Amino acid sequence: MWALCLSALSRRQSLAASGTMSLPESGLAFERIATTYDADLTDSPVSRLLRAQLWAWLAALFPPGNYLLELGCGTGEDAIWFAQRGVRVLATDISPQMLAITAQKAAQHGVGHLVQVQLLDLDRAEAWQLPERAFDGVYSNYGALNCTANWSALGAALAHAVRYGGCAAFTLISRFSLIETCWHAAHGNWRVAFRRWRGKASARIGAISFPIYYPTARQFRRAFGAAWRLRKLRGWGIFLPPSDLYGALARHPRLLRLLGAAERLAAPLALSAYLADQFWIVLERRCEF
Image (cartoon, rainbow, N blue to C red; front, side, top):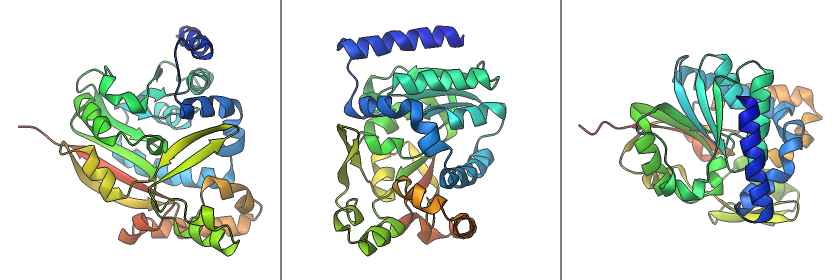
């Protein structure tokens, strides 16, 4: 199964390289860092702390036996964790290289039969052909949904694909991050300190730039549509910093442990979602009868 997936993804990569099949700028950017993504980000001490907290939340939301859709799976870290708990996952991404790594890692961990991969463009949600009410839920972590502003079409597509009563759980990079603003302002980097406040900025990976959108939680919830109702909202990354500051904090393990403890205490507080680097929002698919 994994060999077939990898072969299909390799053909897609060849098409993308030849121009027959075009990837958006964000897809091209993440193609370039796919092979080093785990070493640079996934395996960093800060990321491990944040992910452990997120996994605890997700475990309470999606039990073993569920079938989930993941948007922006990256190198498959979350999909593999779910599969090891007996959850089936359709892991999707815009980067063929990321999907190939996900399939390979799932096979290496012995859960290749529980993790499928599929190329999916968030900017073309209205063209998706996902099966109707096939999924028990959907999740997306680490700001994948900030790479699009197509949230209304996304909400409609997922309302079609997720069963009534199923949940959508997303982390999105927030409009305001207290720790990012304070850190960069203290270092005189005013442009970075306030880059999110306009709701849109440009991200750069290597020579490739692409837009990043910063919705408020209210803006995102409204755009997602009336088919969904709010269940939970909390902050993620209140005291632990954004990824561009991981390296600075990783050199101070004692401080990192203290901030991790503070993070766990502060996350359930109502105000946390408006101060954190990212907010975690859980929406429930409404019944239509």
